[in-house]
Image (cartoon, rainbow, N blue to C red; front, side, top):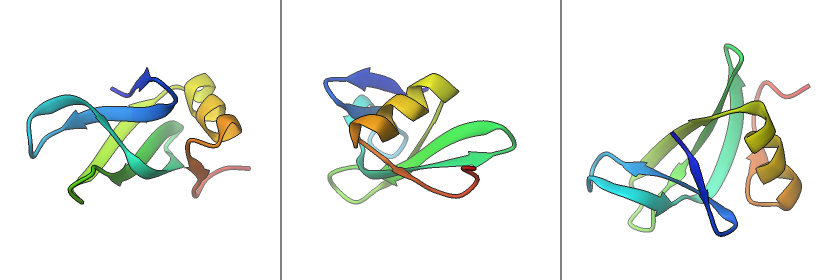
Amino acid sequence: MATEKGSGITAYSVKTKTKNVPMVDPVIDIKSGRYIATGTDGAGNKMAAIMGKATAEEHVKNGNAKKGTGWS
């Protein structure tokens, strides 16, 4: 689950097993009605986080993430 810490998107890193890792250059896609942010952590490990519509739109509006596929 994505959480908001400061101004960027943070998520759980499966590889390093740490919480609230900042996501670098996130892109939010809509797949099957779900908003999924994908990006990397500081070390280049891939990360993904699922969030709600309001949170996703807020991150795009603030410039924290880019729109990916599925946006109308």
